[in-house]
Image 1 (tube, rainbow, N blue to C red):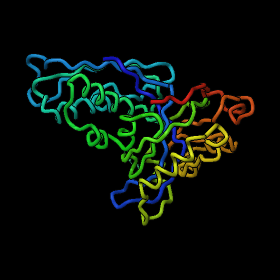
Image 2 (cartoon, rainbow, N blue to C red):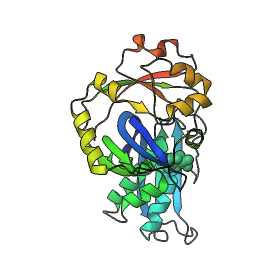
Image 3 (cartoon, rainbow, N blue to C red):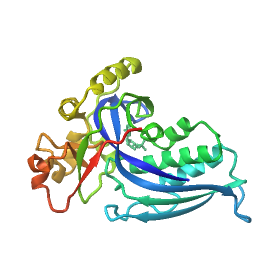
Length: 290
Ligand code: C5P
């Protein structure tokens, strides 16, 4: 089965506080875009002689030029972990194996959710190929905070640590420019540098979903601009001087914990990307609907 695993940007990211388990409680709105990884997934009988109780996964990884060498080509890759977790949860570790071929276009450490999207696509493919199986949401949430969103895609409000996903009506398709610096940013370092309060309030999911559905229904690029917020920008700027310089321009935004920067619209000329360092790639994309 062939499928595409899209990248995301955060249209809004508010940190409500640090939780007792060390994660942060979020209100975030995620949007898939048309920068995609390509995946091929096959569910087949387990190879004769393969060790019992262990996942039999054949993984082939190709990388396009934007992607650095730091995408793991072994069982540390989130796509492989998703296949292993699905086989285990489906009770098929000793009967079945999985072939995965992944063409990476989404850079890692970029705040674009590439690894999480690959993992969700693997879960979705295996569920389809097996005509059902274990519930995907808990498997996805155990793999990472953004993985449940990618089971749904489009535009969604994500609460909790990001795993409680409510799809919302999508704004009209819009263009955006991505700026991809030649360095990645590890997400935990940005959260660690964030001066977040201890959590006191819990959001009301229904109220928030209604609020966001209303705001996004009519949103054009200007409206998206006025809605945009990202509480991870200050710590990311403190940690990475080149991001700090680029984010001086009010039109330039950070996706998630970075390092990807983006602008709504495609008017590169008027933007902070004009003075971007030559090490940063600029690519034009569109939002991608479900
Ligand atoms: O869930 P995921 O593995 O994507 O998270 C990566 C890291 O980001 C976590 O280990 C944690 O440090 C941080 N994080 C957080 N609060 C969230 C999501 C992620 O503190 N809601």
